[in-house]
Length: 198
Ligand code: FE
Image 1 (spheres, rainbow, N blue to C red):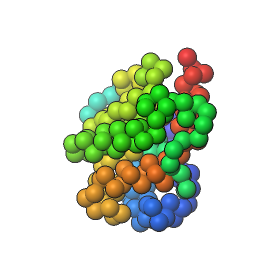
Image 2: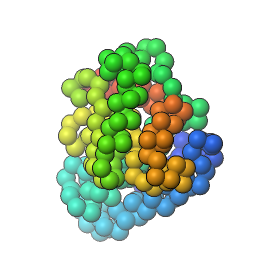
Image 3: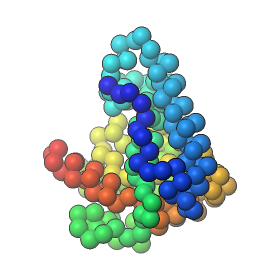
Image 4: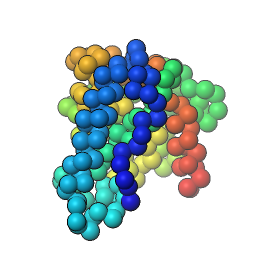
């Protein structure tokens, strides 16, 4: 059961100058909360009303799936960033995970390539798939939970995520996302939770 979108884990201007306050404001208040409002209107008074977001994603399709997944994806996206984040991961479990993907420079290039290649709207992800790190991209509202992988990190590559900061230059957004915004703490928490669940 859920009540609302997550509170932002930092102030709306905390990612300045890398991500403008205006970007966070519109993305969080209009897009993210908009998906939640739409979801609530779709399931009001129906049996789905008692389900969690993850249950809704696993059992629904069409508009209910799209709006539930978009709420979940954005909750996850905000947590994937932090002020003064990014750059090569710290040594330890996350450092080892990235080393397993060829090291920071290769991971960086491959993650950017996945996000740039995603045609139209969607997400680039770092996931654990059967215990191994993997970079994937998904269209529209899709996310890795529905295919059994465990999300560790995501970058929203819908145009609304970067247009105010970078206009049409999605690659520039992916670069600053990786170099200055990624929360490796969040990745570490997700990886730890996944290993404890095994
Ligand atoms: Fe978005």
